[in-house]
Image (cartoon, helix red, strand yellow):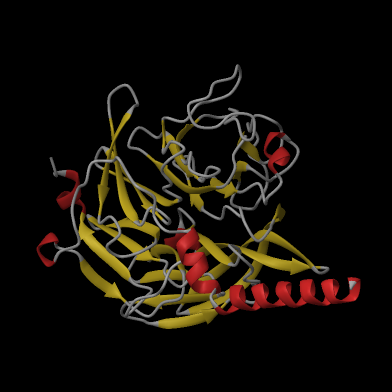
Length: 372
């Protein structure tokens, strides 16, 4: 009798597992379906909105940056780096491990790129059988990548919460958004690189006036994925929260942003509360972030929205939702020549790709900024 029960149980488990495997894409799509939103609607993606398709048939484009001649560099999570424009080319970045949310993620050009040709890449790799995140620097010249140099290693990695955005700030130092790699307590450990915004030199060293005498600039982050500076030089960041409670933060040197001790509107002495959060009933899953003419714009993955946060004089923001659920999941965003470029991310396993996915789209920044 016991044997029959055991065999029957095993058979049931295998059957359920088989059903989950066969329908895994549909199940995951349902799990990451957009939540209801109370944010005021802005533009739609109708033809008269002015949205243009710039590129198609990409695979999880994670970052867009522009070269001095106007060509785009686009990182794909699988490890491909694509140049799109007058000189189109695809580079394979050696050592990239695509696992879960990890892979080839953020990119940045050195502030003196015209002089040194330095390109920085953040990606997940494998060392001694363990996943880890690192930043490498390359020399890009005449369509050739060379002089591969490791800038920083040992940023914790996991299938989820890898952060990944990098950007040079007005101070000419490199800022790095690092996720908690699924270990929340590391976000409060100032000796760990996980759950932090890091600030390093262009050679990968801690900046001399960093607050904790290491690479850490701010801490208490869960999974920051967007970095942008407004015109007064103040740094903002987007961050994924737990089951909603996504954040838009104004970043201060040495500040503690609370994870995992506080979330949303909660307050605790010595910790920062976000300028805006999605609340527990709504999920943005915010990724790339840019600033343009008084507003922050960030891409929403689960929210499937291009969000606009107009900054008020007292550093509060007013939110508006553009293109809600019209293009699917949105991830990367960039501003160039008064256009806002953004990408779909419908091949990332959490949505059903449409024709031409993944895409790069663009719209005149003024069409969004001037919308009342």
